[in-house]
Length: 111
Image (cartoon, rainbow, N blue to C red; front, side, top):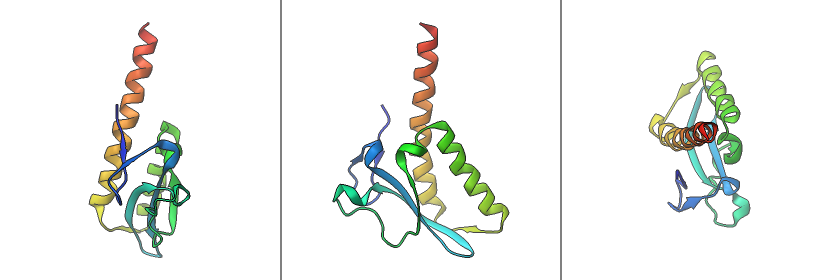
């Protein structure tokens, strides 16, 4: 089963405990971090990031697609992406989770 890993502490992140944060200014989007929410008391959520999405909303296809649409719209509006490897790492975790959910759905349909 796929799992989410906190970019700050390296521990597993449960869907309801996770948050994706990033920094956005007038020209760039950067510093994508998947972490524990500040409410967990672990101190992982980056305070320097000014945008966020809850992990449980990103872990469903509609939330994932909404986030991808957000990224595409920013790029269409001329925003630059810094630290692309950080975004790639987050998307890999989300892709694995969604892929496994689709497989489970198709297996259930065959029964």
